[in-house]
Amino acid sequence: MSLSVKVLIIGGGPAGATAAKVLARSGSDVILLERNLSHAKPCGGGLSLSAFDELGIPKTLIKKEVGSIRIISPKGEKVDIELKGRNLAIVERQEFDNALRKQAEAEGVNVIEGEFINLKGHKKYTVEANVLGSKTEIISEYVIAADGVNSKVRTVLGLKPVQSFYTESERINGLNSDLSEFWFGSSHAPYSYSWVFPAAEGISIGTGTFDSKKIKDLLEKFKTRKGISSAGRKSIYRIPAWKGDIYNIDKILFAGDSAGQVLPLTYEGLYYAMKAGEYAANAILSEKVHIYKKMWKAQFQKRFMLMDVLRNYFLKNDESAERLVALHRRPEIQEVSLRLWLRKDSRKESLTSYIKLFRNFLD
Image (cartoon, rainbow, N blue to C red; front, side, top):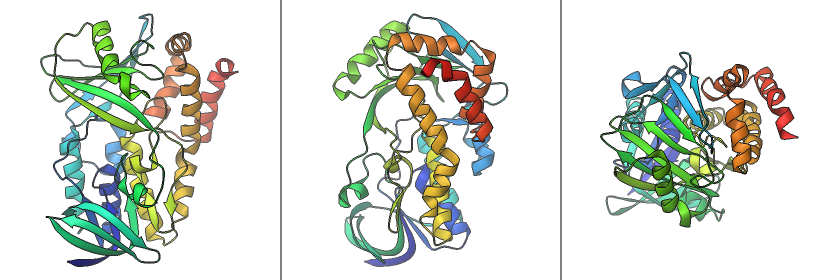
């Protein structure tokens, strides 16, 4: 079977589905190729409440709202931060991703369950896919690679895999929490943090590391520190580490995890994946793919660079993590952090004020 289309999007997660919706709404002919329409990505499912209006996401998908967060230092010092109406919404990823694809379908996108195999061509691309056990060729003018941290498109093009950060999470029913907790300490979260997040049912608890061999032991150490003996369903997943080194190769555009677009320090990727899909789609609509990089960098580059600097400093050891938590006792630090994190405020003055507040600690 052979199909022809203006834009082929490989990967039906938030980045791919958002790009598909934007393109189809403007009249483009789009196929969205997703390997597994029933896939449930391991994810805390946190998204700022403001993003729902910004990105046109149905608020019926919100399972819980979190009105405060708690950060805990390696020595156990706690700081509670009220979100002051700028709440964090919790979604279930399988339902969330399905809903985004349904939005795309409603705009006329052809959603196909099938596995990407190979890609050839230059001005026109011929993509080979396995659809229902049969070889299918899809010819397209543009390709958006939104196929995640294990991007097969990257492999086919001879690109190195995205540098990865490993997480193990556990969904535990019977325990509940009304806030999101971020726990620092090299004994269970070297160069990272461990977490306890509310879920639709129960909690999600987890931790992360760049050393995949240690991840299981680190989660058990964190559960011991937290005093949790209950067990639940565990998942190990890779999160890309941001480099900002790829946006497109000719008319193949990379969006979301395949481009490593996860915010350093907080390791937040859901919002940025959807914005990447939006920007990639708009670049295609303008028929100037190079402006995708310009749009992304204009909006997010300084924020990502700043958060990378802060991660490298404050997560390098327990002493620095203690400073990070102590700093967040200051109301002005809390305010500017919430502006950047939850309100996605990228104004120059906001970034400048954040840098000034931390300057004394980064020399």
